[in-house]
Length: 247
Ligand code: SF4
Ligand code: SF4
Image (cartoon, rainbow, N blue to C red; front, side):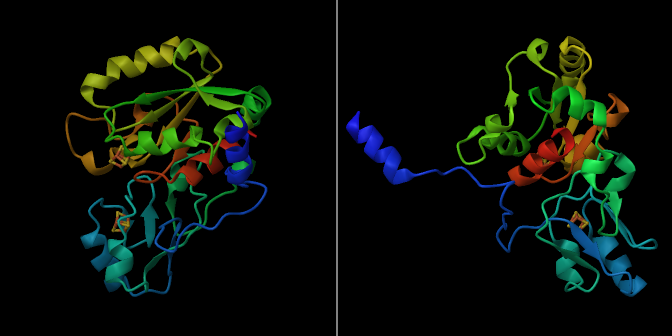
């Protein structure tokens, strides 16, 4: 027992001070993209042609963050002259149209639906549905339960049964085989319920876009309240989204 206490004392508190203290992610992290509106159209077209996700609109000079997998190709081939990725991990939006951006996003706190804050601000229980995801989105949601992120300190937990949940968090491109399970989980979640789409796959089909086996966007099946882009979204992106939208 004394050894355990000694160990605890030596380890100290390992939980992230976020959101009380801002955190800085490593320089290699690619967060919110910023477009240079003065970049030549030819350069924008070259980036659009190289983008594996067809996420760049060269004529309007926008990026669709719902499709983007943050591979960095556009930044690399434009040498930062057209697109640069900032270290800002606050990427989430409550309306899908806001995923198409030149770099500025609406304030999620202001756009959050106030009735959800009122209902779930103190306690939010979520059921995760992996609808054919590759497991990276799922893993980066899973780490929110570790002592470093300690999601439970905010009254937010992942639960085993949709009947105990206030909403569902969906990852993956929703394959044909997962549709029934997804609908059954949604139906088993009591109202009022929230639907959160996490990752490029759930937002747009991600790298599987074009396949007849998947759904190109969860919003085609269910009313989505919160969109969290990334492939996978960084745990800080998930944490920021949940705290800003519900707290
Ligand atoms: S970072 Fe996004 S927009 Fe740029 S090339 Fe990759 S997928 Fe396309
Ligand atoms: S968005 Fe990317 S990380 Fe998430 S499930 Fe799809 S392929 Fe995997």
